Length: 207
Length: 194
Length: 215
Image (cartoon, each protein chain N blue to C red):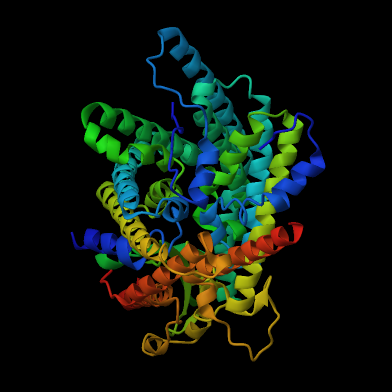
């Protein structure tokens, strides 16, 4: 993924957030994407937690990239990632108990979120610490953005609210299905279809 | 016994691990293009989940809890799962090569399957005893197997259908999964004696 | 250790290609490592693990008290919400029939200037995603003053929603053992609803035993 030797921070940010958006383009980290996006608050909470882990793990893996032997690379990455995930978990438990209640088990499960391991393997293991941290930030923002979009749609249609504020008015009867598990698959399916549609239009224009 | 049956039916049907609880979505959506591969992946998951449930339960009960190290749960469990997967792989390669060739390529993927880590953490969260944990791990795995087999069967049909262009590939699979999930919601009507 | 490589699922689309990206590394044959190399490998892994564990120990030390305090605060606040007039909450010990002891936790007696107002009963009930722990306030004459959920692992947006928006909990206010049957479950979250109703019923029977026994 990092083909150039000279790193442009702007490029990294653009890649992580838009052109290589972890959720809509790369289709990584589906479990939290589907499970926690029932309310915008949850989506943002999950996104920011993952972003924090991404920045830290990318930075430290990059610092240690010469120390970590190739053969036990993945194991070392997972240990480092798990360390930061547990840190986030404890911090959220201590200072944001409400969030920890609603995200539940999906906080520890950030460990196995493929986005983080993917960035470690594809970027942090080959680049110096600062660009790696920026790459983590970029992917994190991309992930958070995707979660926010999905959760906004689901909360609005399924509950008539956004961030708890009633948007649709009294007469709106929410489509409960959207915040049920099935709705998660459905909304993501339509969103990715939309992304594919836009991409094919853009490609058609550039030709 | 009845209790175990309830836990089992719960994990397979009523709160299917994948379709209702969203654990293990990556391999569910990823490795479900063909029934054969789905079966292989599913079997490997059942196997690993059962063993991982047993091992992590024992480790938590006899090492983490007595020494008040519960905050190391996540990291310890993922390490156990990773090691377990590695050992299973080596064992199968040596002893049962036929099974290894069937499951082999899916085993490494299981480490990053959040269903496995999820089930081990749920066992502890729900304060299950040893036997219940193992049964729950096994049943959750079977739930995964059922879901991935169903989806793969659907995808084999989808491959021959005429689908609007933007929906080709991943989106239609997600929509199929949504329909599958809706049908599993029907199982919530099952009344189980608690 | 874990050779997350050579996963060649070439026929698959999208996701598994991403999985491959995660792990695409030149194939490494599992060669028997020489003793020295194995030692270096495990030594380095040990250092990493030790560093991470050390970090976690520090974070745990910093957050442990706060987490415990949060749990205590949630309980206290719930009790005050159930009996706004009460001046004191005293834990009481009680003996219950066996099928209740499993579910009933601490029971607090709410008093106002020495006069008993009612009881706060901590109950555990089996919900959809695991245990739901709640506090049920029951007045001296057997009416429910309210139900507060302290902790739960119900599905976000479904079971969790009916707990947070009060659509089920509010139905219990001023209900009695007889009228609790009219509490209706919420569509889409039947399991959670039933678990809460079940928990409230257990709390009611616990208080009934308590007051009958005249403790």
